[in-house]
Image (cartoon, rainbow, N blue to C red; front, top):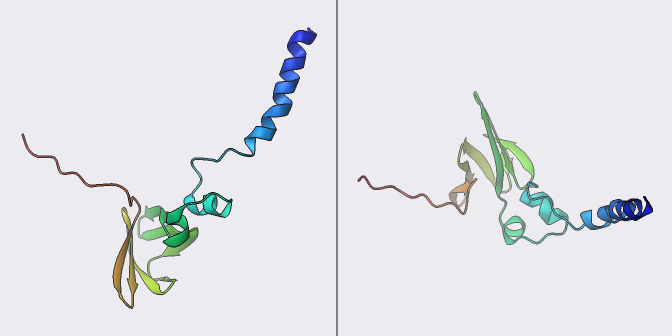
Length: 111
């Protein structure tokens, strides 16, 4: 009995020690950067982390901050929120912040 019980107790006691060093892959980039993980995207340019469109209500999360269309944000104004990203109007011009910055659009050719 002790041969089975002792390793199980040791296993359950050691598991929480190693769990602190693990990172949650579903955690938004801004939270990961604040917790000590380094990310060039999260520290330099705020990233669109989420978009919610429900009827006429349009919300987006930019760098951990929830914004709506018409809100002032950094040095610009949120002019449009779409299902693929956010349009920001700045004094220097309009900028599109993509929800999927690394995604490439591929067009299939007809066969």
